[in-house]
Length: 108
Image (cartoon, helix red, strand yellow):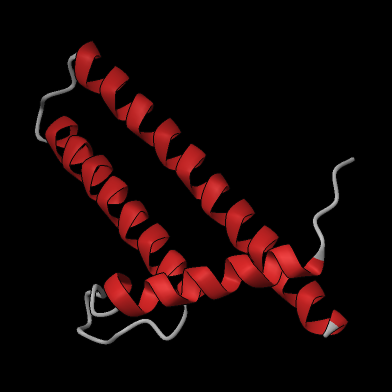
């Protein structure tokens, strides 16, 4: 198992925070700014999931309006599976980074 020392993690977080100051702020839908790279990551996952949900809703509407051809049903299934994949990855990344930050906070 590979271990990463606290200096490496601290340097990464510092660099990520500096990048946040130069380009990530102000990209939120509500017009606010992200106060941290962790918040920016969360916002990006949220926007990605929202876009995927929109695709699923549009395909569902097509099928609901009589477009229930097999190709549309297969496409809806594929987009639903993509949503599941994205959702699982968003959750995993949020949990992993949150636990890393918690561990880092306890060690300082």
